[in-house]
Length: 325
Image 1 (tube, rainbow, N blue to C red):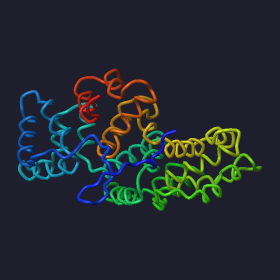
Image 2 (image 1 turned 45 degrees about the vertical axis):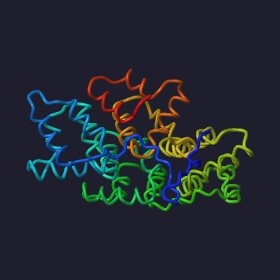
Image 3 (image 1 turned 90 degrees about the vertical axis):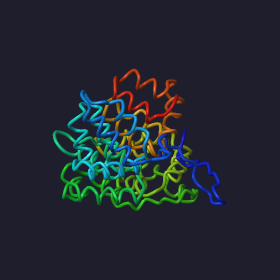
Image 4 (image 1 turned 135 degrees about the vertical axis):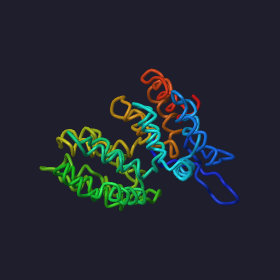
């Protein structure tokens, strides 16, 4: 089972620096004014030049795109996202607008989309909240309040219920242990066997507390300890003891902790929303690892999957963000 606990270190000027696993890097010789001008011409050209728009957006880092946005508005008097919304259509429009958002804005947008209209997309809520750092969650909450004039906690309480709400609110507290060192003694103490199948009446709060406050590496050690004392896997135990949203939530958290990138890769069914969310959201984080693990797990490259499931300019954006095979 692959976990997040292995991070190779490289040394830059004598200081340890985590190896970069993103697929999008800052563009060399970057010139925001030049890019803004190129985009304006592509948007205003007869028929709209999608290829030019894609070539700029895909090859610039998010920080560089924010600078292009600022220059574009200053020079044209129009917001770049509004200009693209008027020029593009369908999936290409969606992925282009996603690329123009900061990571926190994109996450806040995804959370809002997942809690409005008919039905709540519970898997998306868990995927985002279970895999962001404490600082990232705090920033998402700030942006959400700024954009939608409601506290994210309030929205979760309104749109979900029961133990699932409790788990989401626990993740929104942003107090997960981020120490990468593993405490074996704590893992033994945390063994979920005692809180689960071995008792009459499950203590859901024990599951929620442990799964939402321990680090990924620490949880992996806990699951190893669990496997030593139980004849069944943790997901099966959860399936036997729980029902509904809280069952899916805790199983998702367990899987994200055990093989986070693999779950990102596959998503919950193949659809454009999932591809856009994962590939845009992880392009400057760990998409390179996602691509590697996807091939290892499914015996097909993520790029091949994209070629089979998407088409035209939308496909071109996704492939550009994923990098070479």
